Length: 146
Image (cartoon, rainbow, N blue to C red):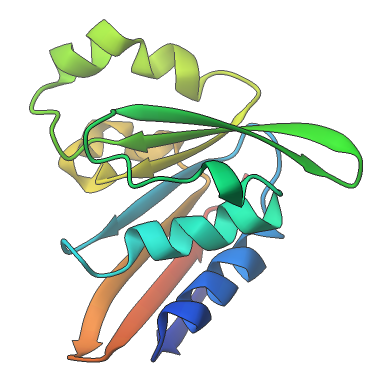
């Protein structure tokens, strides 16, 4: 199932992130792609808000992985947030144990996932954020059958 939204503000992008997060469950792996500055981190902030871990969010440009602790309906939630912008090879992913993280029972969101198409079959959803105009973004969400 594919959904498409047009966002004209950071608040709307965060809201779409929260709405999207409501469909996620432990073990899901999300590909989050888009141009530099398109709003991936803003969308991610919406996801972390939904899971009550927004206070911890920072743009992960320098760290490759941030782990957020949250909760939903009284249950603990662990969210892995990868940023592959500075990764250039599959061997670098192997070094950080990328496969093991994605194989865990935790929820994972992978920014710049399109740099490594060999992992595409692992994603349960893909999110593409792109410029629709100078002040608006197009958000395409594809939920992949489980």
